[in-house]
Image (cartoon, rainbow, N blue to C red; front, side):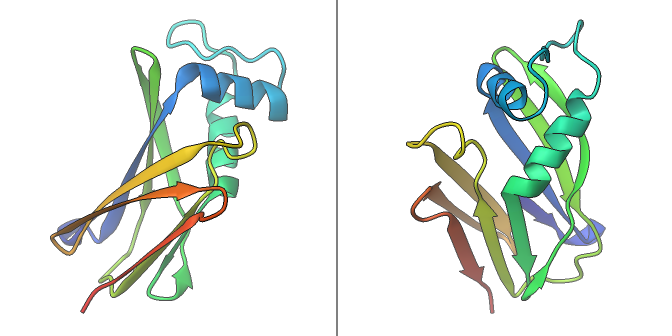
Length: 137
């Protein structure tokens, strides 16, 4: 996650193993889905957008934000999902809750890396501790 002050946006890239995401979508939405760059099932983007919207929540300066799903691309066995939060004039506090894949894997760990206000931070979120909070002066 990176805050781009000039664009007043938080740009988010998630990286998820293709087979894990495919398994998740098949379990939750459609048993016949295939994730593949060339022969992909219809509605895959809608399923991913819905799932990430349900499982990731970001609060900036005490206010819940809306993420916009921009798209995805595949690289080897990873799917890169691109999201953006627009109209962010400044960030004094940043909180993320990330439950991605927690419903599929009990031992799932989500690594969150941020570059906000020229500060790099990272933390690992697990099912028992699924939120990270940063404060800036």
